[in-house]
Image 1 (tube, one colour):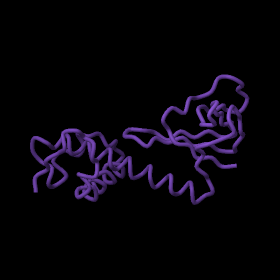
Image 2 (cartoon, rainbow, N blue to C red; image 1 turned 90 degrees about the vertical axis):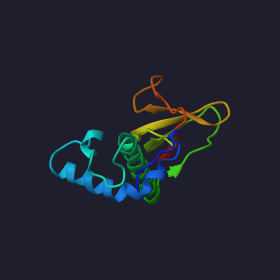
Image 3 (tube, rainbow, N blue to C red; image 1 turned 180 degrees about the horizontal axis):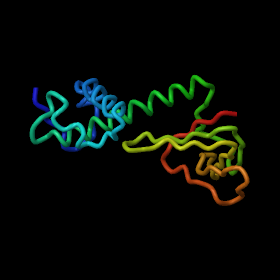
Image 4 (cartoon, helix red, strand yellow; image 1 turned 180 degrees about the vertical axis):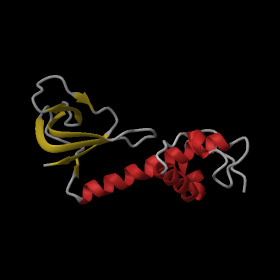
Length: 149
């Protein structure tokens, strides 16, 4: 089967059938002391050869990251982290750990230890203040928040 991609890149699951083969090559590259650059996968994943190979590899990298992040969020919740979506308006609440994660593509997980979560006038978390900081914090933007008391 030759890989044909959705040109919008909106659906990472379209490359799910090739993820196991991709992960095997990924692990092999790491075990050999290499870094998994997209070019490291060229010609190594059956089914995505040809003119769409670069796109297939790019999408597989994104799907791998997305699934790793989803597993990490599940693990954090199992450890007692709770989703924080609403707070007392204009408040600051201290937590031992705060984790910010993106629900979109290419997001990263950002962790803060002994920090305060700050809410806006509607009670929506909008910033993280690290310990010892009064004003210089980090905006949450569109990230989701997990916190451990």
